[in-house]
Length: 282
Image (cartoon, rainbow, N blue to C red; front, side):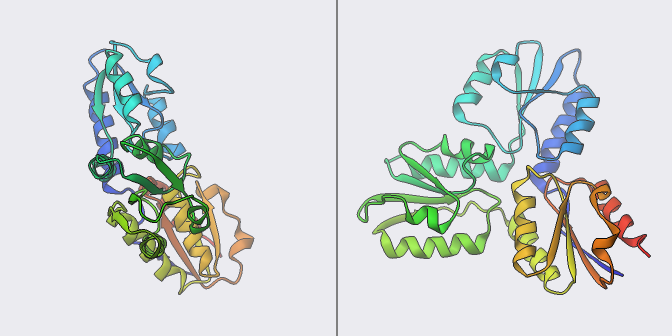
């Protein structure tokens, strides 16, 4: 069996930076409790490792105090929650992905004059909630062209179009074209991360040439789910797993070429384990 492993699989820059900051905070704890506000990234194995090292995952600012060092997660948080965190007295370190922070500030600046934000993304995702909080006025979140079409948009209104950083660039481009046909005044922000585009493109290229795809990453990870969706859209059977133990030998019977990729929050050791499992098949 031939295994085609994506070169872009694994940690992105934002995840690596966030975990480096968390590691540094642990090394310099000096008696302080090290906390994250919500999961610092969306990978359960990584989170379990840090929990074992004493990191506390707080669910709200109310759980924090002056004795704590708290890291803002890679996905970012809302402006209101950040204000509450900073007034808690805790020592705050911002581990928001630089690309997410750039998107937050771009939305803030673009909506200063009251333009309505149209945000392409998953409404319940923490990154999207954070992005929304930077809009000065009204905002709508939509996850598909169909949801966008159902919104009551005034043709002569002022609008800003932006996206969750991990969304599909091709879908976003189509959405942009459809809105330009409907709206007289539309500003478009380029908020999709280049690393996301590169991962998605490589996943598509691999999926087109293999018999089956394996995508490794947390099920709460939006960018991992999109990699799996893209591979499946190529008509290839796709297995989204968190760990190699979820794979079943019968699913790879008579398969000659297997594609392997992973989300931006998936550690290398989990990708290596999946590859080793595949290589061990008879």
